[in-house]
Length: 273
Image (cartoon, rainbow, N blue to C red):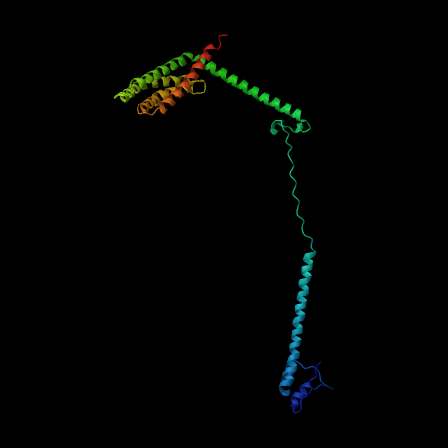
């Protein structure tokens, strides 16, 4: 504690501010101002320094308290247990057995079977599927033969007509090649054949209106369209030196004629045993 002694020559009013019963006591801040004013600049600096130190101590105490609170909070967060990550479930390996057929054929009850047993099951299923497919194909073929056998004469007439029209076009390709009016002669021939080709196309549609009942109806249809359009145009291109279009049309016609001839022979031979 700093005792403030009255300065000589100070006013009695200032001395009354600091005088107590039998001595001097610590003055308040307003008292210091009055006393310092009476005592001079040296005493004022002493009292001001004391007040500044007291203010610094208060702020230091506040900072220490706040620091203690922050440290306690940090310790609390560190002490809390961290959540443990959930381990991922391991993937179940799929056992692959070589030479045992597709895995889709396996059954839950076959898990305890050996490789040979599983292969036998797969092979039996495969053979059963092949047998069923062959049976369905045989039934479909029998259905087609039955239909075309009932229409045999119509098929034969259509086939003869197609071969006749093609022969006339092939003859024109040779006869009028290199002639001045060769192209005109081929166009004239194609135009004269168009009406008869359209008439045969009507007969074909009347034979199988819904389609899908004859094995060679599509081949007849393709042949008639080639003879009416592609074949004459290919011959005209041949006269201009382009050989590929005519070769392609003839190859397609050969394929259709071969299939029609083989099928009609099989249909004719069916039921004679």
